[in-house]
Image 1 (cartoon, rainbow, N blue to C red):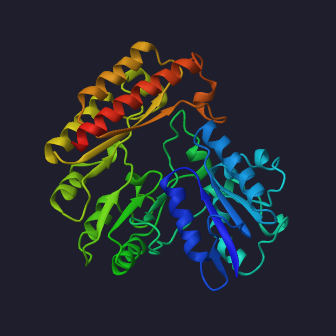
Image 2: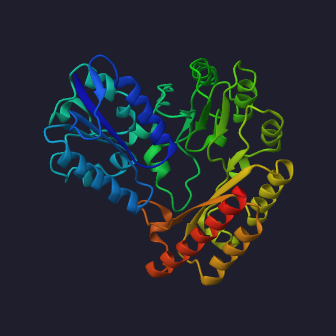
Length: 375
């Protein structure tokens, strides 16, 4: 029996896709490698959202090559999609596979066509990979995760100034409504206690389908499924968390009272420069609305620190906003210029030492918020 190891960096969508690959591989011919044994196949599901994530992806690949001598090593994910030329420089890397090729990795391995140094079996990533039809990641009720991820949507149409993800994953595409319901039902039937509905931009769920549908319609259908399984939403944009969705979550016990709503900056000018389509006032009103409707709800947010042009006063505006809002936790990221994005060309770069100090301060504030919420 051959062994495999899957190493995942980045977001919940990457994790969902890795779980699907793991579920498809494990069987009579393949098993997961134990922690101390080398694997015959190593798949590194990379991330490109920041320069640090790209560096960590390269490090993970080199470590996989070093610690698994003789293994077939595969790079896939967003970094493999957006910068395959950088990965081609890594000695010992056998395959570089784009997002659409990722779905076929298990079949290639099971059929014996995923050999070492046989790149011809895996076409290199292309821009078409990120624009193709929705690549499903079937749910994996394997017991390895208490709350598995179900990918219901992929891609993004927003093109925020700082973000590489639309270039990596293409436009928004959705899992058909009936297929999503069947997947949630299969997880419930398997006894999974909770599922996380995830995607790159889940508020856009269903708009691309024929006929179009919506995240609200999916949630409304999910609430009627049998069983006691809970359902959690992953990150959702402020303008897409509607009053109807809030009322449904507040009124139905199945849905977790947890909302992750990205902010990025509490300064109006920086928010506009980022290309974010909402105002600071809109975000603040939404958080207050959630808190009034569900005082026990956990509300988290993302903050991007050091965007070009962020003055000390702009940063202080973000801190003041965060301090006064009933948030439960923060995800804080330093700005990272990504080639091909609009922000990469912007002047007024914030010095690295200032970004580091600002991140430290916001993370400390986030820990205070988390502790207060737990109490």
